[in-house]
Image (cartoon, rainbow, N blue to C red; front, side, top):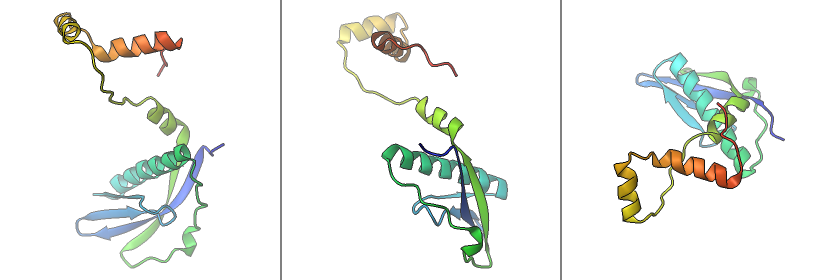
Length: 137
């Protein structure tokens, strides 16, 4: 079972045009921000998304390097970034996804004339068909 809380060091690189952020333990996990607050918020989102993807793919999650072992340049600092996964996992599981479907034109025309919300109808029909209740927020 995956842990609920992760802490990873990030390198914040300060430049004239903003702050770039990278996670040395998670190649390809990069983001940026205009201010410290913005960069930290973006870093938390990027870290959570990367970890969630690794969990979903069954990839091993590497142990974080101790921040004191990272070497940085004068314009860089090491920031420990936390990811609290339960609410992020819930958000990802409940996100909307786009599906393409095919129905007869006459049915589409009739539904549009009656201002049918196709997404709600499909969701309700699928839940009814699968015998599940609407997930409460």
